[in-house]
Image (cartoon, rainbow, N blue to C red):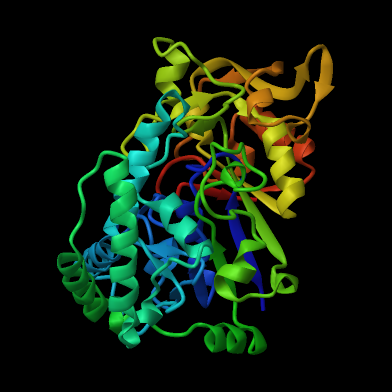
Length: 421
């Protein structure tokens, strides 16, 4: 039995979807345990190109069962759309995809409030995806949430009516328009009927799997430094993103998580507000254009920067990372010189990530190391030894700094564009 967690060691968008898709054929269960549809995982395989937000990225492995744990918040329409997309592509999921009845639902008022809160903050906005993630998690911990279990009785109507009366007061106070109970009730009743065949208590399934030596692959949403406690607060997500969240979000005791794969992009990106110490701010530079990306969930252009080894080292220590998967090494090709952050200074003193808060991180002076690049196209390379010498050196430098091996190297977006060491 193995329980392997796949986490992002930066600010998300590291390529976890590709990694989970690549590894899924070796496991019995692949599970999401945190976040919501603010996550966006792009998967490219023999079935096509898929942008997935809720269904685990390993669902394409025919013998693998996909799970959405109670720690995930669900926008029902998004989930229904994904299921229909997968069925249309010939990815049969019936009988091998289950949703925890403990998961909370994103309601229309959560999205409305998400936008109104951001607008009210003005210059202090945190750059949320406006998917209702923060408000639904706030409702969860303040006893105002609605779960799938509520649909099994008349509790759904009772709780919904109470919440709409409460939320309308806030919405109107913030300048929004009130919402109507009947329309939301009927819409969500319809969602429940469509998803009911997939809703199943997961505790006994997970526990039986652990007892019978099944292999689990746990798929994190977002990245380490969007964690509510350890991230760059308040520029973070609303859920815990480190592997320990799988205990609460799925029901797997921490002692069973034996492997943690830290997915690390060969450079650094971030969507939305918050510090990005190595950010390249000149949008006209060739390097910025080469690193430039569009976020799968929001469509926003990602901010880009050089690789930050201080961030990667912290993620390794925080989450107990046992091995790294380096993605998008091919994007660095054709650059003669690379810069890598090897440390921070603040007021002339050496500091680490944990020495400063988000606002201090925005002020640190970066200690850069210049590293020679390579000109060769590496997108077809299948062996580490066939990589250019300078590309090999880049990988070894990351291993030495992080203190764990780089076991996989991504040289393209496709599943097979992966070097296994």
